[in-house]
Length: 566
Image (tube, rainbow, N blue to C red; front, side):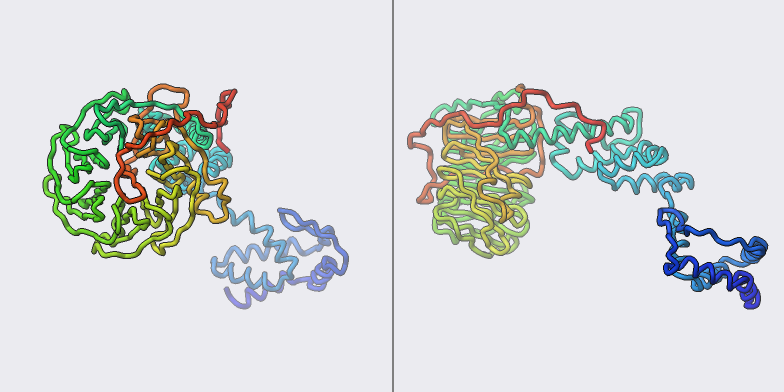
């Protein structure tokens, strides 16, 4: 911009400078002028006095302004604004604010960029997505055509095991993870499905809290001695190890026995299986590897001098422990090629349970201690002390170790520093088996009871001890030896020669619908007496009442879900 032209323009805009100054003075606070503050432009209560040359001069300035480049226009306006007072700055700010706002979700499709608008909105949670649909018809169109409710449900199924399990049980998973075809319902289907899923989740959580469940029972009918020491299940089958030396495979739906594997000469105390093999440990001191489909014995490992109490295998590594006080670490190249890598020695009594991941091997013993070993080097790391009697069971995941003992307590530990985070009290006899996930701890004991605990509350030091046990389940008439659970059910076994299936989703009765979570680990191994020895249940078992205090069932059906869960 030419300097003389800019000066001339400023001169024109400052014409009648005295009048303009008088106007500013008139609008200043000391004149007691009342200003109206609103979302729109700030307007003074007094009108601008009429000036004869204003309109003509304004049009001339605008004509000059239009001839300049964008850079010159910006420079001129900046200089002009710098000559204004604070009140005028506020007036301009109120005028510019709505001009600076942009509805980019509406603007992007107009530029052929629908996919970007859909991608932006796909990061919203359900509450925000409900709100976005109400903004305008264009936003609603982007959400509908982009199938964003479908994408939200798919994201939840990928990341949350509860959602995954519900999708499998209720069979709406067949409408997910598919491209837009005639088989895929419209977005409205997924919009209405979402609140129904939320309602199912709330029902399941209420059933867990109140102990409402559908119970199914498998009578194992052992030939000689009775007792089911270990089990593991998936969506098709339950595999159990029995005191009568056999391994029984049950159909998960019909509850019929499909196959009986024999070969051990002692009680089957522990087992784990995957899609290829079943690995079992026995009081006959051997570890056997079986082919899952045929039941053929593929390998027999003879190393331990006494009963094999527990084992774990994953990713080509297996760890076994024994009443002989040792822990054996094995390399599993194949079911038939298993070699001993290292023997870990340090416990002073029977080693009742082991668990491991890529970082640590964790073992618990009748000597009242938990020992931590390096998985890669097999070197000793630290000892966790606190239990007052022998330790019968534990589970380890991430930094958390949860253990159960014959001192009738459950302890939570931080494996990195060795600190005991919480002591759970409530069982009346030895805590024989324990499992936990992200929400709950489930424990079984020699008192015949299964207790469900709130894990998150247990990890909060401010939570009162009285709030930690959510429910006590009493159905077994003998000692609880083993249990495993997922989001929907607990499956437990006992000295009473039964396997119980506690279904917290289908509480109206009927067969259990099938669901399996691959991330769940296998069940634990045999139990511990005070002297650290394996016990085979020869003492008389007292009969326990099968009744328990449950929340009363609802007298009315739940109301239908609203269009939006929020």
